[in-house]
Length: 141
Image (cartoon, rainbow, N blue to C red; front, top):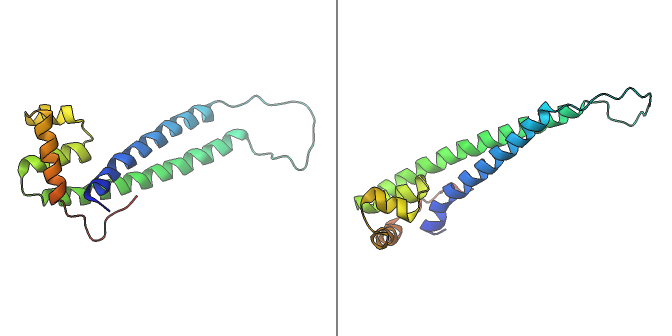
């Protein structure tokens, strides 16, 4: 695994969590909408008698647990990434890596923060990636 692949994992996991949170919001909207009861007498022994919103509640619970697990993994990954980034000797290069991979900032935003133009930021980034040492047992998503 290259340094760039290792550091990009947090970005991907963060987007996956945001996608799951959007899905959770849709499920919560659905859980609030309960269908009206039917007063017709139809007996079917094979029919599920469980209320429809119960399945929705179960999906909400499962998705919440998945999101919690993903957040825990993201926190662990970012902690490990901070240690890796802190090992980079040059402070400007460290900050580029932090802003890019921990805070998910664009090149323009990083340049504004560091008071440098985009080509300088990209140069620092290349040099920083060359000096990054991926841990022997990296967290992999």
